[in-house]
Image (tube, rainbow, N blue to C red; front, side, top):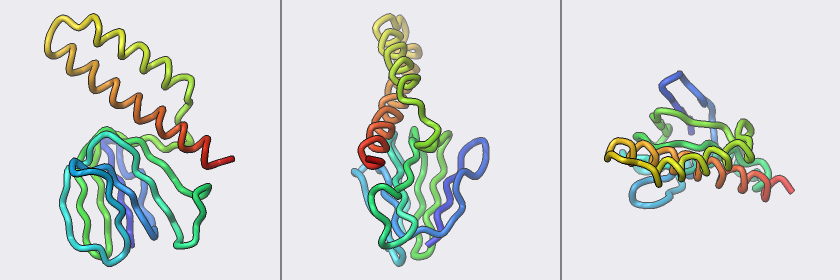
Length: 140
């Protein structure tokens, strides 16, 4: 099946894959070729891609997403998000420092807008840290 991962800055992924694991509002789901049609909200989390049926855990590709929309058909998965970061591009130390800054922003927020922005940053950097940890464990 074809995976299309589209961000505000353009197409991140456009390739044939065997399995895609997606973070939805109802919980994580796995999509395989021939899946029933579905439209769902993507929540902050990891998109995990298995390119070929026999690929081991160490061959999985990870993308951190902050939410968006998922459209599944029997032959295609299309994910539309504001941003998606490939696991290989995530620097764990930078994400940890950014998470700490976001937590401090939340503590000092004086308005609902500041609180919402801080919460979004916390979600983003927590997902990025989770993906960095997954990559580290699966690359061993």
